[in-house]
Image 1 (cartoon, each protein chain N blue to C red):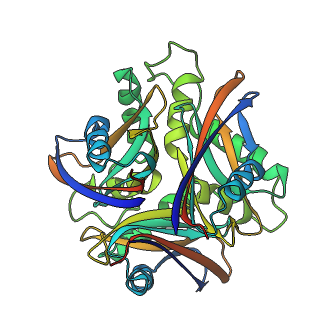
Image 2 (cartoon, rainbow over the protein chains, first blue to last red):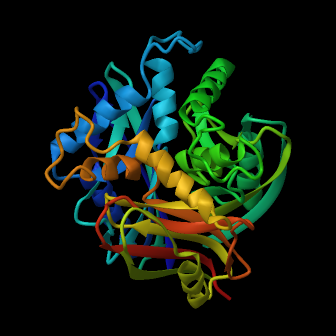
Length: 142
Length: 142
Length: 142
């Protein structure tokens, strides 16, 4: 018998960088009681995104942020969308270069992530923000 | 009772840039009568893509295009896939750096987008193109 | 009657570059017997990713790799996550800039890809790796 389950949570970020939410998503998948199917995580913002990333070594996450600071520099002379400050336009571009949603298979009632994969909210704004995340789980429920 | 609904539409682009299709996708979700589930939008091309982006300030969309023009310059000396012109290879790379599909939760029969999120076709070719978009909606239908 | 079908396969890569898996995914979709719905492909690694890309001209795939070599250079001075070699950190960044999952509509029991779209495993490590790929198909099954 197939079922569709949905849940939402909010998350408080503290400036640019990655925040792991794997455990929270796993709890939602278990609450859904769905055994085989798909979990889709969605972030309802244009200045923060989602990534699946190396979960073991925190230096990898620092290097990622250093890379994006260089790839999408604040204060580029050609930006005109600057009303909310120099991190505003880069935050939209960084969101486009990463993801608004991530989909993960559900197997035996658990997230089917690889050993080194974690799910992260990637905050692109300097100041703390409340971020809303929606999770949809669809699949077989005995 | 779960249901799977599908629809397709074509869209005429007029050169490089973003074209909002949020309203069209919303109509398809309402036509599906699905209340809780997931809507997945898919573009059937390798020279145009999909993004979820800031929907309020059109200058953000101009800045995005300016960024991609710099990130993936036309006529790079090392490109060999140039048969269809200087915008051909950049269009494939820009598609890879953005998305061929976007998934959005469905809640109470509507797209669960954040306040400032819109769904856009991102055209990467200079000349007008017909673009085919497929929408799949899966979820609970009373 | 809706159904959820899942399958996994492993894939042996031979260094950086793209490896087409469209046919394999198509076989899984046909085995699922699902006619209308959604197929989601997921790669369980942080050093290899998935892309939907031009499937006709192999030079496009070589140009893509040349672009990424330039965008995310090995041995950047500011990288500190270098334990596994100079291709380690770039492999994580290249994964974030592409995808861990791809979702494709299923129509009449087949993948609803456009004419020039193929599904590729994109390996970002220099040495051969075993890569695990999971496929979830959800939809109408007569």
